[in-house]
Amino acid sequence: TTGGAGLYPARAWVNFNGSGTVSITDDGNVSSLTDSGVGSYTLAFTTALSSATYATTATCRDNGTDAASRPKLFVSKGFSDTVSSTTGELIVTAQCNTAEEVDSPLVCCTWSN
View 1 (cartoon, rainbow, N blue to C red):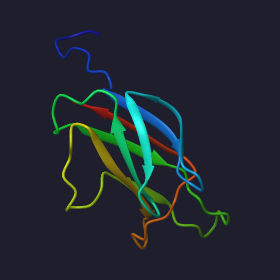
View 2 (view 1 turned 90 degrees about the vertical axis):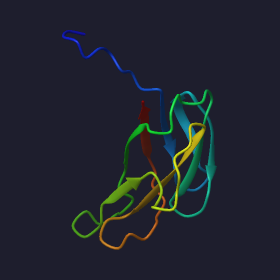
View 3 (view 1 turned 30 degrees about the horizontal axis):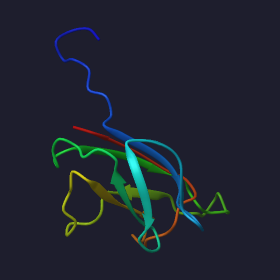
View 4 (view 1 turned 60 degrees about the vertical axis):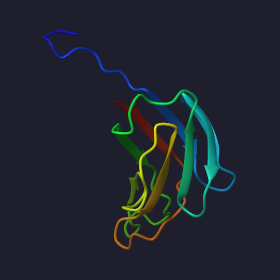
């Protein structure tokens, strides 16, 4: 690194299949993945993060088949009633145009604090 900012690596990361039988493809500091319903996944960290005020970066693959009309997906760390935790997090994938929760064939997340 250069300058005074220092280096802030990800504290955890995961790549998982969120369709059908959900499963972790690869990870760092993620101990488990639970299918919490359509488009809803609960992840647990192997080692707790130092603070619940972490930043989550996430993306997911579009699950549509018609490229011209399929809605894109967004990833959220839950909704307003979800409280962040140092031991894990709820990830939600949903259609952008309706906010309807939908499964995604590929979800990738990183956590930093």
